Amino acid sequence: MEFPKGFVWGAATSSFQIEGAWNADGKGPSVWDLTCHDTDQIHARHTGDVACDHYHKFRDDVALMGEIGLRAYRFSVSWPRVVPQGVGAVNAAGLDFYDRLVDALLAAGITPWVTLFHWDTPLGVHHRGSWLNREVHQWFGDYAAAVVDRLGDRVAHWMTLNEPHIFLGPGEREAFHPPGHKLGHRERLLAAHHALMCHGRAAQVIRARTRRECQVGWAPIGRVKVPWHPGIFDGAGGDGQPNAADVEAARTRQNAVPAKDFWNNAWLADPVVLGRYPEDGLRLYGDDAPRPLPGDMELINQPIDFYGANIYDAEVFRAGPDGQPEHVPFPAGHPQNALRWYIIPEALYWGPRFLYERYGKPIYVTENGMTNLDWVDADGRVRDPQRIDYTGRYLRQLRRAATDGTTRVGGYFHWSLLDNFEWQCGYRERFGLIHVDFETLRRTPKDSARWYAGVIASNGASLQ
Image 1 (cartoon, rainbow, N blue to C red):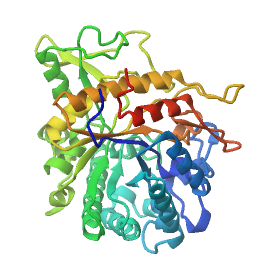
Image 2 (image 1 turned 30 degrees about the vertical axis):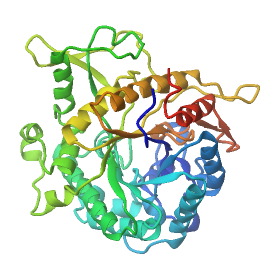
Image 3 (image 1 turned 90 degrees about the vertical axis):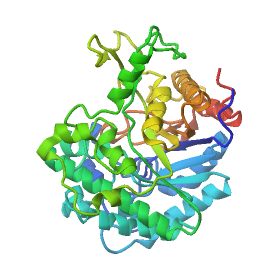
Image 4 (image 1 turned 120 degrees about the horizontal axis):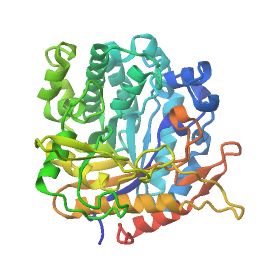
């Protein structure tokens, strides 16, 4: 069985994780540069100074994308590469890089999907108060305008923000991501409100300044809950049939705001798609909730064409004795990846389905993948059967969602194209379809890259 006709097959990266060239050609510093250079927060004090050196090797990387048969490539633009201080003067040389990249992709028959922000906040914006400064949405809009003015004649697919849950959670609460703050709950909610205004302003700018028909979305994290059923933990990743009460329990929990954190979908997504904060969140957050000024919610609630979701794992829920959602823990020894994230393929069935039911927008899986203990064998080959097994199981569940009439699924972007700088883990983790030797920068396609090429060529029919 194939995926629907026109299904988008791609892979994804982000600017800070692969580009390197951290201060080349007028680029300004980001909060991640500051953290890498001046703190011990990053594993082994690794930095993003060189990363995969994609800034200089992008043509080689596009050629590798062609070998895999990618139809689309999701990448992010570095805000401080384009606007070095985050505010004010635009760096033409930074835009030139993305100009060349887009042209190379189009020449190879690969559609660019551009994300405007993937966590690398300019240090200049940080010094002006970052997400706590209401003016940030104007600065972000000016940055978006510079990018769209340069690329909007060729780029038709745009995402505004990647995972605000993360840059506003671990970045502004737990302090293990830059900028290392430990903000109070009220401040974090205010920062989130301003970030959502950035999304809205960027969406306005894209539609006003593009020179071709375009699609606008975003790429939040997908906090997925799946319903319990007998056999869900047996590793088969099959088409289990939970009862209606357990489905409703999982759906209710996925749509809920159950705690004073950002590990939910609705608090950030409801304003974007539905134009309001969720009632359960307002009750829970009370006086800490932001007080929108006139026009704020209208700005945030700009029309979007698709809903991106970054989905790796899920939690299992069932209906408890009182009918309320009850968490079901994973059993001892349940499969995990190298970061100890539990592997549960049905995340790509129920996650997109519940999101589509609530928001009514086509769902694109904008990230999914696993970190593994990969190395180049003595014969020069990188064997990663676990990644092939993982991805196959997850994709079969996504195909189920896309073909059973429950969910409109538009595409899948594997995370990641390249092994890269994995944030606070430095170069310890390997998510890529392509192995990178971080000393020599040599690229070696893994077995999973060749396998994925067959999946793409068959539009998913090769999945057993």
